[in-house]
Length: 216
Image: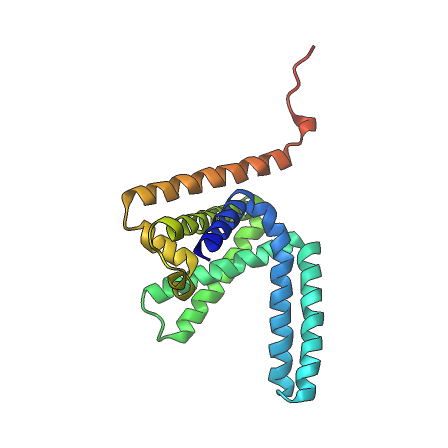
């Protein structure tokens, strides 16, 4: 069991780390599908209750919302990416607020979250390169963490239950922080994976038609 999970973690980690931005275009509609289903179901039940009829209709509404958001995420990928950037910055600002002990003050934490969302949207709207770089950073980091988690699961005694309870990336980070060499491997792997992604982005922008061809 551990062998299978470890292989899957390494495989998924390498895929996410090396092809993160390209995979993002595929995963964005999937995320839209999940978010749309959640909004449609919980929103309808919140308004009309949880009876048998209401639940059935809520499921249908959830399916419609899921399909609509998935299509919109695919058709308007750039817009979906801007919204994702806003959500990511909102989460970052909230974490900063929690780190400074603002958990008891929901109003201030809410303002921080809203500010992060607005700043993220402004940054993403002003520069496509900024957003692309952000996606490559996140996916390279997550991909490295997943791959190393698979390695830790096989050779260092890290348990699957620990990953289930605390999260795969958190568990991998906690274990890697105990050794200078593992930290160095994490950083080196992260830099290599991100460089591969940036290389792919450059090749996508500058096609072979624009490549230098020596004269005969």
